[in-house]
Image (cartoon, rainbow, N blue to C red; front, side):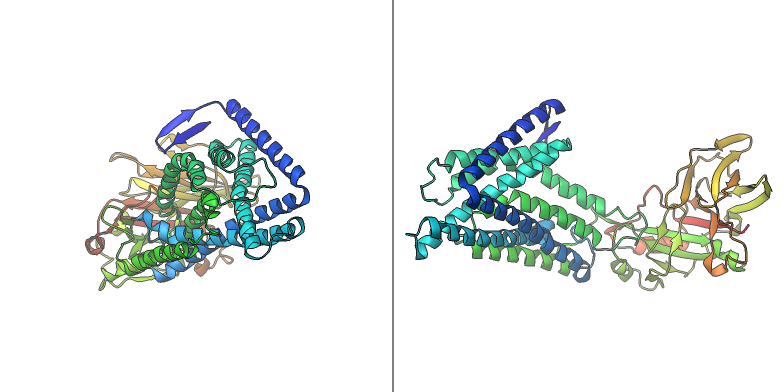
Length: 535
């Protein structure tokens, strides 16, 4: 079990000790809750049920409002994830709507509690009428809303202990510290005593330890999430632009609804409701104005957007009868969002963008990007185009075997994708050495991918032996049309060279973008070729 303090210090203690300690706290909490229900009978049981409902409503409304904002951001901001360079913006963009939604959901539960308690008091305390009744009922409902936080964190602690979650100590702190503060400052043994306002000192004592122990973790969680979502798209353009916003919004909403459950209980019958609404709306409006106007940029020179500029020579189009490979310069980014802002600096370079320009790079597929054919026939030669040549293709005892020679020409960095729906197994030889042996082949989306990177003296000619699957489709030439090309083997060779057009594009890209790619990304010059199924 790991205990993090302020996100800097770590205390380690055994899982067995943690389980014993947590079970003890859970047992005593359940005993106290059970005794309260027995003493209060039906009215307390109903109040407890409404308190549980308020927890659910708080979470629902807290998630709903920021998720709506997350869906709207891509339509009103230049970039879908507009807070990458300034993660503090999530406080106004998602934190304010989440806190507002949490208050709305909790206030609905508060109103239902007041109605129930008012019915109970009208029977048990008929002397209370008018404003006095409304005042006392509000105080009692306020206390039940505060105590609903105990129940919320008790449930989290039970679940965390049952599933042996290492972070269960967070629920323990948020349960024990507020419960101790409430018992010390607010609890009374007299059931006839009228309820009073919750003391501010109770809130301070309740939240001091939990906030200190959890604030650092929350801040780091947001930083990690923001840093992850900008590179989570394996296939550029494959994920919707709003997805990253929704993930961050939901995470922040959950944190807000759980951590502010005690604080919000002080607002319902105080004069702070209007001030709270004004502050939340003002912070949200300010954040929206900053990101939509570009006053606070989404990317900077220090925290830049990754953009891949690749000169592509595509020989897969030669399968439809063409004699010349297709050459163009492609522009794409693993960071969600269109390339509209980048194209403003690339005017005159004749780029066209859209989702109809899909490029299969063997290790991934570009689902959205830009393409330009301007000056794309310079900077490379036909002698560099890789070759996939079928040396032999024969079947014995219902087992088909195909031998393919691979020549990567001047490239010593290449990626090969094997269609696992058609090929059961394969081997790769270079001279007399076997680089890839039979067996142990995995697949992702029906493809097994091999990536090779060698030095200056590394080989460029290989022999690929394919063992066909008996369950494959083995599409014939008649079944495989040119416009629906189905590859058996896909090869991409990379050359670390900047062609004239790529150099022009790199010089014109905005300062807040950088030509940095993942390990699976191609170099600035890539050759694509493939072998069809109907070989």
